[in-house]
Amino acid sequence: MTKITVKVDGTSYTDEVEPRTLLVHYLREQLGKTGTVIGCDTSNCGACTVHLDGRSVKSCNVLAVQADRREVTTIEGLAGPGGELTPLQEAFRDCHALQCGYCTPGMIMQATDLLAENPQPTEDEVRHGMEGNLCRCTGYHNIVKAILQVAGASSSASTSGGGQS
Ligand code: FES
Ligand code: FES
Image (cartoon, rainbow, N blue to C red; front, side, top):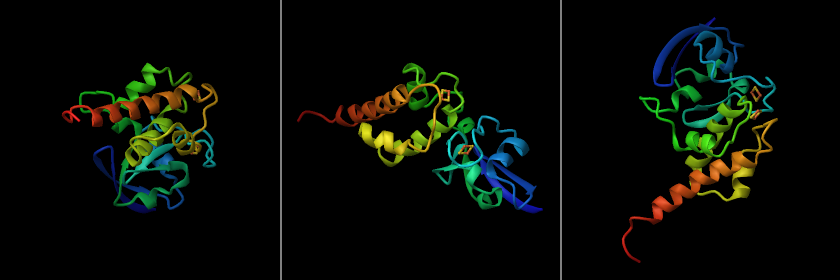
C-alpha cells in the first residue's frame, strides 16, 4: 500500500491505496464521490472525467498514486458554496442537454475545461473538444448547444459594458 495525500473538491485527504488503484475507484470507493461515474473502464467514454490540477483527465486512465500531492475537482466540487450551479450546468439544464444523465458529469467536466482554454469556441471546436465523451441518448446536438450558449454569453459579456465604440 502507498500513502497519498490528495485535495479533492477543496478537502485534503490522506489515504493508503494499492499502487494499481485507479483514480476513479479511489474517488468513488474510498471517498464516496459517486458523482464521478464509470461507463467503460477502458478510457473510451469520458464518463469518469475529472480535473487534475485544473485540466480534464479520464480518471479511469490515471492511477490514484499519480494524484498524490495534486488537486482533483469532480462534478461534486463545481457548484458554489450555496449549491449555485455554474453557467454551464445551468445551460445543460436549460438546453435539455441530457436524457439519462449518465454521461453528464463527464461532459460538464470536459466542457468546463474546454471553455477555460477557449472561452469562445466555434461549433467545430466544441465538437472536436468533446469527441472523447460519448453519449448514448442525446445525439449531442443539445450538448453542443449548451456549451455554445455559455460561450455566447461570455462573448456578449466581454463585448458589452465596454463603453461606446
Ligand atoms: S469510464 Fe473512464 S473513459 Fe469510460
Ligand atoms: S444522456 Fe444518456 S448517455 Fe448521455
